[in-house]
Image (cartoon, rainbow, N blue to C red):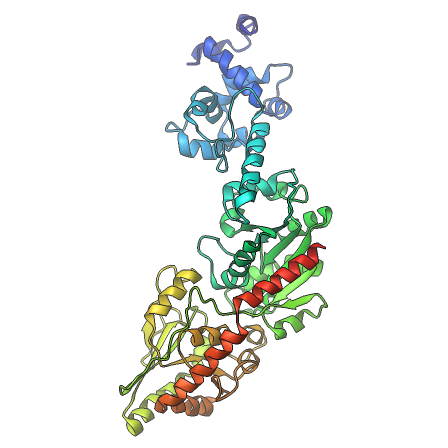
Length: 518
């Protein structure tokens, strides 16, 4: 090695760079061996990138590439398993330093990682980094398999989906792709996917790998699913790489499930979601057409797919977040009526605007009862009128778990309302508000459309209203009759306890997954 260095210097191959370099020849020998052993530089790509031939590419890198090439160029020839941006951002105080030179000279000995997913997998500088990384990862994932059936750690599940190794287990391996970040799950992924599958994982029959939006920017979509790492893939609603999942699943014989509780392809043009959905329309349709099973939340939505492979798993009561509240006795001369929802329901709330203006006045005059309407969300921030009181949404209100616990302690309503515009899109929605009001100890009045009239028996476990007159009369009945409020609530709570159990939904998922894997 020393002779090679002497010959290179003597023949003036790199004389200027060598004498200007702050790396002495003794260090170069060590650097050379370590970089060569780790096999992190692709020889052909490096030589083509620098238009050089018949040179020792590692020495050229040490003397030239490491000093002169910018990060973007280095990414072309350095194996992406060594994440240059990650290493530079986490360990290099001097941004002009080269990450690879720093790692082989000192970073390895300081236990620095080569990428976000590294957990100390590189144990020596005498073997290829790729072999060590995936060997270390394989050991880690096999150990994890023994103790955990619901895997969410990005440092394991992302290398897993990018690996070529097929891990043998006695379980059914299910890759789950959410339309939200996993750390702050919105209602749809929490209710439809996370809660039932997490519960199902306790059976030890399945390994679930949960990928959220916070995983996707860390994944190389062109490198995922190189083999049958999953038996089944579940996609919730919409993703930016559906076509890739379909192609890879078909290639490796992986079964596909599409899950949605909304008719996304029928979103109206004035919806905030329309542009995004429309841009992905072909990909959504392609995934649906290639799905082995489609899971929806309502019978109406199931009919819209017009396919034989649709299963209905209805929403349910999440007892862990909303323990059943007892009826609240109210002997005062004030009644609180409430509504909560996202800030996209101005059309729905407009349904009851004139009703409440009339109701407040007449109930006060006739019964000396003050009617207070409290709205959480519903309207954009700049909407403010005197027919309701606004309760500001908390920060992080889209985190379903946080929001449910917040609203459980926040509201003390006597009656709840769920106005919903009678539209094609809305009639594909579920009766979730009915379930939530019941759990919160609040009897409700609901729009008389299929979403609610399929479950609410008018005057028994709630009230249904089709027009201003019906909204007025049915709200009035509940306002003036506290015993009726108590009776309605008792019936609705009995209904959700009997018909909206998480246990039943878990059994449905288990049956679907087992049948699909056979």
